[in-house]
Length: 176
Image (cartoon, rainbow, N blue to C red; front, side, top):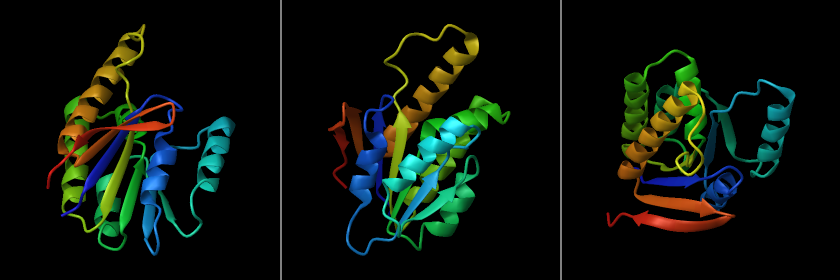
């Protein structure tokens, strides 16, 4: 049964770096699943920097929307799966026209796949509830949806970490 580690934190809090450190190990086959889309020059540069921080022998998969399909294919042949990041997945699905219920269903399907996987999974997401209330309705709706999705994942996760200034605070540890 697959173990899930969930890492939350604000922007630039060290979430991705911590996920990479957790996944490193001798002879581990690691799949890095990136949900980000390189839509402009600045994002392309950010992606290059992230790639440089990962071991070269890791497999990288770019999948902005259909994670369940990809995870079913790779979850039995790798030791660790990193999904970075859940917030961008939610954004991609929302902008792709899915309603909140459909997005929640997709995330539940992802969790189901990961729970039945051979691999350990590490999911990275932004904590969206600590900032100011967004000024417009779209922003408020996204914040609310992302917050609900984070709650769903945290409930299913075996371990949950909250990142603050590069420091991981473990806020949940399952006994199983």
